[in-house]
Image (cartoon, rainbow, N blue to C red):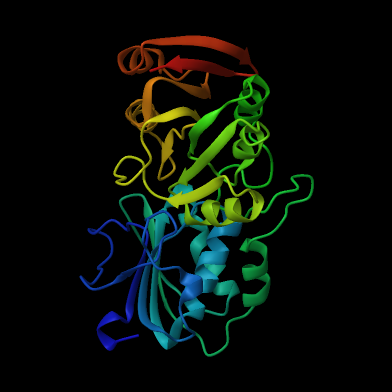
Length: 305
């Protein structure tokens, strides 16, 4: 790695709270095209600024990996909203043997430290957050991925409502490939594109969906170019959180993107939380949208382009 690229950034730390150099390498799995922390050599960086994840296991894994890729004495700044993991960053870093300077600003906790000569508990934190097969799930997954250790009930409802599909299609926000496995049970499916913004989910899906008809794409559907079009069908359980905050516009964007990817007469099978107001955007983007299932707080629609 060139000296000019010895600074890393993970996620999107608020610029008013943390200074990030213009040449910093993006390392977040939620930014398509970014480098992976795991791909960097030991002592590859002199500085890293990290928007710490809220989830405990994911956060400790990310902090551990960030420390591992810093040169001895390298600088780590980690921050997060107090109520979304920020209050725990200091304790996490101290458990790794770091001396921490903590400040508070704009409801965030900001922790700065240098890489100690020896990182305590590194192996345990990395193992807990790495790719694994959670008991009872039977699929590869890892902390940080949506519904990482259990089948999401909305996806389960959609899977139970799906007919045998045919032709070429896509699974938008595919996660670890649970819905894709259901779709590919139909021999009439010729091709299925699995698309997700989370690199970790795509990596797990590649392991879980061993089918020559399937392909995986790491992409943000709100910005994606080169996604397949003229499709016969789409299945999706669209996200409605972005950065930990509810964002109903995200699911609405998925619906509009699905309509653009389908051929005339193509069908979109969608599951959503019952309280989410997707009916209006479905009516705007599709010729028809018919409720097909409603249970456990979730609703399933079949929409025709």
